[in-house]
Image (cartoon, rainbow, N blue to C red):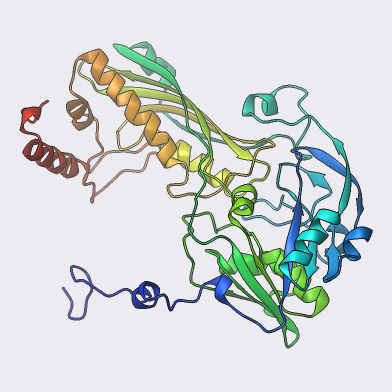
Length: 424
C-alpha cells in the first residue's frame, strides 16, 4: 500500500465531528435577516384541469406579500431530471399534491392563511391509480404523449425455445410496494438575490442539475444562478429531484428579497419521490441438474405523475433482472407507466432491490422443485470470471460471489451447527 493511503485504515470522516457535536448547519438552520417564508397550495384531487385561480382574498391576508401562479413563471414552466414534464406551478393537476400556487409572506402563519384563502376552480378527470388502468385502451392521457413513458428491452438467445426444453419451469407474479425515503431532514432551503444573479442554499443531492433547471425556469443564463449544497440530513436518492429550489428561486428573483422554505413532514410525504412499485411477471427454466436455461420477465413500474428517474430505474431493473446468475437466454421487458399516484424516482438500488425479491424467490422455487438445496442451486449458476451477463458483458475478474457464498455458509454453520454440511 502507498504511504499515506487510506485503504485498510480507519480514517476520520471530514464531517463526523461537527455532526455528532451538533455544530453542523443544515439548510433549515441557515439564516438571512428579514427573509420571507413560502407556502405552497397543493392539489387535493388527483387528476383535473385548473379552470380558474382566484388569489384576491389571499392577497388581503395581513403579512402576505405576493401570490404566484403558473402565469408568473418567467422562463419554462417545466423541470425534470430525465424528462422535462413536471411544472413548478401547474394548470393541469396530475396527483394529490401538485403545486398550484405559491404564497410569499412575512411569517409562517400568514403564509398558511394565504394558501388557505386561494380559491381554485377545477374540472376533474378520471383518476388512474394503477398501471393497468393507465395502459388500458381509451384511458385519459396524464401527459399529452400518453401514459407509457418508456419501454426497455434486454434480449439474448432464444428464451422461448430454451424454456420449451427445460425440465422445470417456474412462473410467478411478484408485486413490490411504494416506499418513502423518510430521511430525518425534510426538504429546506434559502435563496437571496446577489449582484445580478441569485444564490440558493439547499438540501440537495444534485446541485449541478438544480442550477440548470432553476436557470431554465427563471429564463436566466446559468452563470447568474448559484446553488450551494448544504450538509444533507439524509437523501438516499430522494433529494436528487427538485423540491423547494424553483419555489425559492421564483420568489427571490421576482421580489428581490431573501426567502426561505421548509417542508413539514406531511408535505415531504405528499410532494416528494418514492421508490417505484413494480409488478413483475417472471418465468424461469432450468434442466434437471439445476442449471438455468432461460428467463422471461415483464416488469411494469408505476412512475406516478412525473418521470423523475423512472426511465433509468426501469432499464436498470431490466438489465439486472437475472441477478448474479448466468442465464444463456433472456427475454426481458421493462415498462415505465404514468399514473395519478405520487411520482416515483431514485432510491437506493435503482430498481434492483425490487428485482432481487423476484429472482431470488425464483431460485428458491426452482431448488424446491428439483429437490436441490437453495445454496447448491445458486452455486451452480452464479457468475464467475468468464461468465456473460444478460447484456452480453463478459466478466474478466473481480467476481467474488462464489467466495462470498462460501464464507457466508461457513459463518452460518458456526453460528448454527445444525445446518449441516456445505451441500445443504
